[in-house]
Image (tube, rainbow, N blue to C red; front, side):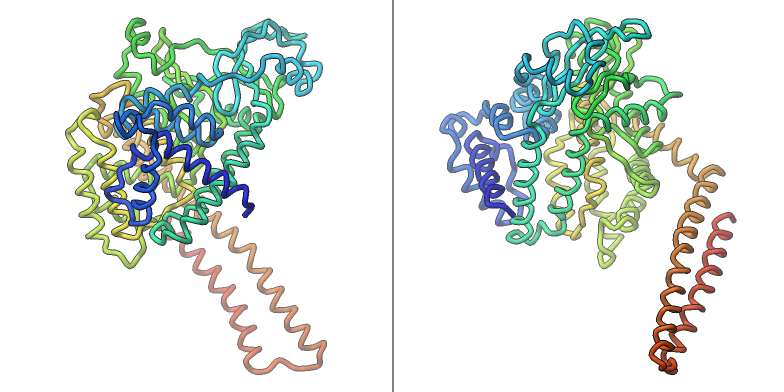
Length: 514
């Protein structure tokens, strides 16, 4: 690891501690080394923070540190119930109100990226929104063959890739230090979590992939209502430029404007939450950056309008079933089901007690039922979750990190729109319908297809195994050494294993149809 990565990490720690970021962290349930680190860090807080308890400069500090720190701040901005209303309000500016880059650079960027097609983008406005990765301009698209239309042109910030990679490198350094010096963090797999974030960041820095994500999601939701996304103009897309149809809507965080336009905020909150769950559970492909700066409301229909598909999440069918069962277990207060699914997917080691874990889950779930969002302290719930994960030596699943982060974002947005939101009641129609379909004939057919896929993949490996056995036999002949008794038995076992494999796999498929 480069020394510069550790320097950037130390600098980030100093800046955040200085500006009071550690004051919003409850050290009560943290391991000893982390408690000590927070205590020492708070010694260098600005006097104004220590004196008043108000954190007023965190927005600027995160902006100064780099784009990945801004992403973290965007998530915190959706959780006033965790960081407090004043800090959340300050961090909200990170979502789309950052300083834009020099407008004089835009024409040259477009010309280099789009070549002759750049001339079709006219009446380019000043930046409408500027975030950590890119900024958006409104423009008039006048194609050689087609009708003129208003579009949104997203342009990556010059040099943002280098800053992103520098940030990620320092994250790797921090993860390595945590694993080495704070043993209790090993189960959280910090390095693998950073690897997941690294892959996500690299995808976000290529706007051609964002265009492809918009296209895939459009296919998935073509028969849905209540959730709208823009359309890509493929002739005007490059690695650092993305052009889409312009969408008009009210920013979802502007509650006064929503109320003035007569938008039902309760219905809007339900659409946000249900749309996310539908995309994650039904499609396994979801918008993983649904902070308020990326969400709007159509004042005419009350639909949710989403933009910025740079960070997308994808989970397989097994993980979708896990998510659905977990939510349904909480909805129906079936904590045994919730516990069993955590064991099935590998969150909790097999040497732990399912019954004890179900009891721990009940201690979290029961206080949440029958209470509105405004009555629930998510800071307290998260603290209790941390204690339970440590008690049962729960392991992090890095492939689910984006899903978990997205659920925190979406729940925060829905909670802000409707403080009386009953999450379980809103989630039930989506989760329940999907599970009922899974248990029906279509779900059984999909199970068979999955089993056949596993069978076919494994079958492809059998010829390789047999081929290796044949090569070993030829080597013996080439050396004029007949295979000894042990070798003969080994070869017979390989052949027998192949036969048994096919028999077992066939029986497994047949049983799954019964």
